[in-house]
Amino acid sequence: AKCVAVAVGAVVYQLLVEYYWHRAMHLPYFYKRFHKMHHHYKSPRPFDDLYIHPLESFGYYCILYAPPFLFPIHVLGFAAYMGIMGVAGVLDHSGVRLTIPGVYTTKDHDVHHQQFDCNYAFPFVWMDLLHGTFAGEYA
Image (tube, rainbow, N blue to C red):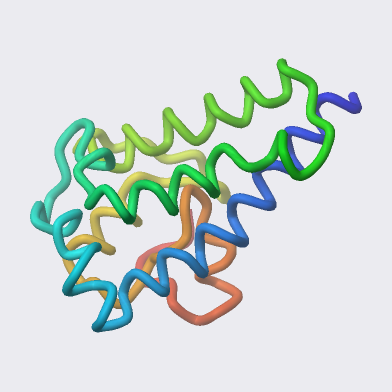
């Protein structure tokens, strides 16, 4: 149970930090220099989440891999966290339609790539709902 709770804590940490990081990447200065590369594809294809500027990827991977450096996390909890993030990243950029009602849908990130000013949260929309940046139908 503790392992699951810590994995959930890692996901919550990532939801918070990644949302603000992604919003920052959409500020004109950072978007033009770094994040625009990732938005080259308007309808993402498999593994396009890896199509990012090296400096942006450094920041993103610092966020992604930070949990074991910030709080104690069992290796299985970290593996579960990384599994969620990895699978969601690939699915969000795959063109595959997957919805888990009330939790997640791959459509949200497609909308983000088409409109640019919404759906910054990853992989769950809760931060967008909180900040009024969500566009689409809540899963």
